[in-house]
Image (cartoon, rainbow, N blue to C red):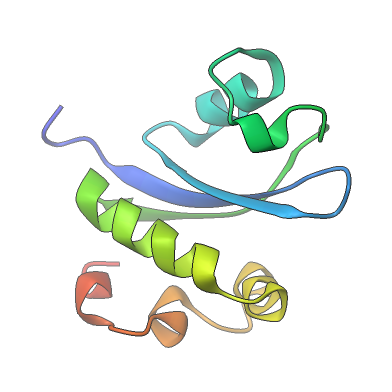
Length: 101
């Protein structure tokens, strides 16, 4: 599993809120959020979920750092990322971990 590629993803909930997470298999993880006890507590009762953004990052540690940074963004900044008006690199406070993105 050392070579597993992780992605950061953002889903839009039915109540128009955003949830950010990381996963090696984004489609499987979203399915877990929607119909499995393994889903995030925040997402319980907030479905249906819509995947609005996903970016392949690399190793789990890098993905977790970037996930944290994305979670710190304002709604406007997240929407700019989702719309493609800006990139992860532009939104990062410290771009070094993003060099491999």
